[in-house]
Length: 67
Image (cartoon, rainbow, N blue to C red):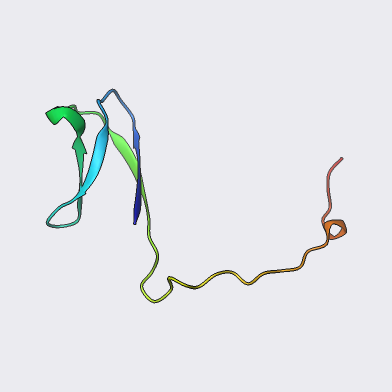
C-alpha cells in the first residue's frame, strides 16, 4: 500500500504507521498540531496483483491532433 499525505496547514512533517484498527498519521518530533490534511491510499486488490492492461498497437495517424 502507498499513502500520500497532503498537509493543509503548518506542521513538522508526518508519517503513517500501522495502528490497531488501521493506520495512524503521526506528527514528527512528538509535536501535535491541529493542521488538517488530505490523504490518498493506493493498493492492489487481492488476487489481481499481476493483472495488467493488454498492450495495444496504436498508429500515430489514428489520433486527431489540434493544431
